[in-house]
Length: 338
Image 1 (cartoon, rainbow, N blue to C red):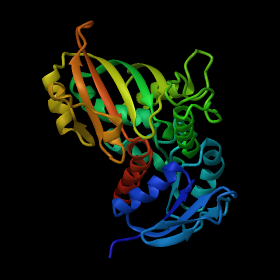
Image 2: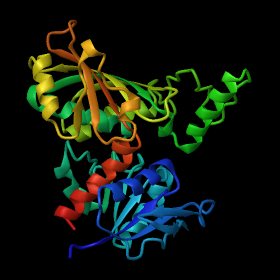
Image 3: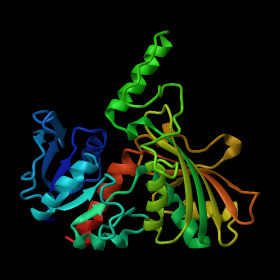
Image 4: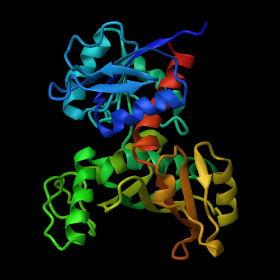
């Protein structure tokens, strides 16, 4: 009989936590016992996993006894506070927040791009899950970089409200209903109305005029790809429930034709090529929602530079952008290291 692993999900009542449970079940992860952890406010709720109703417990520093793998998705402050306690209790943490991503002793991993980095978990017992918008971009760009050495990336994102959590999903739904019925919309989660609007701000602004989300894409891409690729980003919140979309422009060291790019992407792990302009077939958020693949299309040469390509990249931000990526890391972890 194969070994079973005891798993804790921190932030189990959140949007990503729910997807983590779903992914563990769908991918038949060998779970022995599962512990669902959340804030004191959510403790006492019951969630279902593999046909069993499990009570959500309050997250404390003593929550991790007997846990092998702790999947964290409860925000950076809780990850900073509780990951060390989980590691001390013997668990390996896979953290979905930004708390540990740029720590030089913590691997930042996308399994299709740099799975070998997982071995670095031994330094602190923590593996970081990248930002959702970074994950889908590097999954698509990895085969192109290997073939033609990407020198520069210009990316504009169109990010779903689910990236902010359940309260943002509710805000978009309620605002849309109010506005369609001729009533004013109230905003609490975002600084402005999100329904029928686009907000060129995700997270707070840095001193350089970029948002933290934009700088995450810049810095995380360099760490994951292991190359000094010049990257600039503009991140926009759009009135979509699930699925982040990205317009990506790359400049490569050598020429890469559209046909060559399509061939590379068609064979790339985790990528689904959706690129038939004549039939109006291209990646859309409604097609990516609920799926694990990163969809890529609208591939065309950038005629303003010698070696450039434009791509349109779409993925489910709660799945490949968060939960699925974390579970894929856990699968490699148990296969090779635990």
